[in-house]
Image (cartoon, rainbow, N blue to C red; front, side):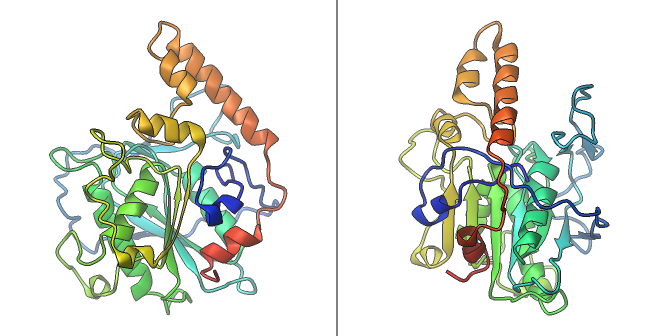
Amino acid sequence: MRHFYRCTALLLMVCVAGPIRAQVPAKPAAPAPEAIPLWPGVVPGEKGDIGEEKDTTKPDPNVPPDSPNYIIRLGNVSTPTISVYKPPADKDTGAAVVVCPGGGYSILAMNLEGTEVCQWLNSIGVTGVLLKYRVPARKGLDKHTAALQDVQRAIGMTRHRAAEWKIDAKRIGVLGFSAGGHVAAAASNNFGERTYPAVDEADKESCRPDFAVLIYPAYLAQKEDKTKLSPELKVTSNTQSARCAALVTPWHASAAASGVAGGSDLPHPASTVSAQSSNGKRERARTLRLRNKERQELDMKDPSDPIVARIISGAV
């Protein structure tokens, strides 16, 4: 796990120092769970003009696909799915989390902010529901429109099938990174009605998450006035009753305040500035290498931190 943070920030809801890698004890690789189509028929608004779904990560001889540092950047997603990662039966708490990878509404960091997160959740007895939502942002629509439809549908479907999947329907949360954090925040503030016409019984279930974890969320403030929330984040007293926590690294906060687009590859402010110079790409690459080194130095030996485990399981 390469993207979890020092967990006391969850309670304090303040910025944390930076990313760490939570090492789950090595075990034989389990078969990947089935990818369940999110929509029973035609996906709302899809026109079939997105192109082939594929990993867009550029080949790098220093980071082959089987490397632990390789990041899957999945692009052109037009068939959204959910994959249910169940914890061992003797550890299962009944809680579940819909996981939304980041990627600036352009791609999805499917392993770094998806499968690895679900595996970590399993280690603390929580079911991970990995959402492969639609990217890139659709032309003519707000960047989050398709993704919000998908996360609303995913929460409703998870609640509808809670008994089948042995999940507590009253402890279903949402967790997202960067752009995924934004869509998780949007889901936490847009649950009074669906943003699409109901298609089946699952859409009769509530799509309100019981708690939310926003990890370096992007796009929360308006570009014109950073003191105001984006218009899609309609915070109400009902929103406040949900268990919410925001983890924001200082450099992501700085970039967000500068209007830099979010995403799993969002650069450090130093590389943002240097990108304006002729050697910007070289400096950005150096910064990303330093980030990888920092992740390795900040490895968590025990991913089962009691504070984050209690928040995600709904015990707080």
